Image 1 (spheres, rainbow over the protein chains, first blue to last red):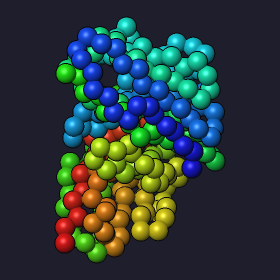
Image 2: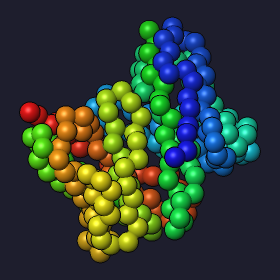
Image 3: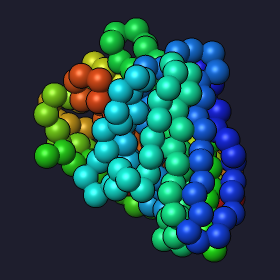
Length: 118
Length: 110
């Protein structure tokens, strides 16, 4: 199957700093990537849909000025958590979409990035 | 709106069979996915169903009834490594993201 990588896999930062997370599709082109956040023992919550060459679409309640998304190429999307605070500590997962037979678009997930804000 | 329901937790014995149910309400339904997620890791794809019926893949099978808004994931010959969360996700028509249920935490005991 298709491979999606994320970097870094984990990061610890001080409150007030910014953190950039990269998501790459390694062996396919992804016009659409998705960013999720997952708190302990909870399900994945979609934060935003990232479209190559255009602005991201954010879900209700997600601050677009705090979570900056850039999808500059067909294989790379970045999520920048600006002025991070302890409540932003979470597991951030990206996924990229590839096509399947029958018109279904399977989402392949990156390994996730665990962010801890002190 | 849309809604996906799964049991929160299940426990089963090694070697046994377990069925994890998922019910959903949505408009523009296109297909249903099952993912497995171990603690601290990203979800991995298990199966997808577009048409009614059973899809079998080794020890795992998934069933879909579109008219009833119902799916289940069947795990046979359970192994300890099957202890994980199992996420039901629906895809609606158009280039829209998957919508995930809250997941079912399965514990396999000896």
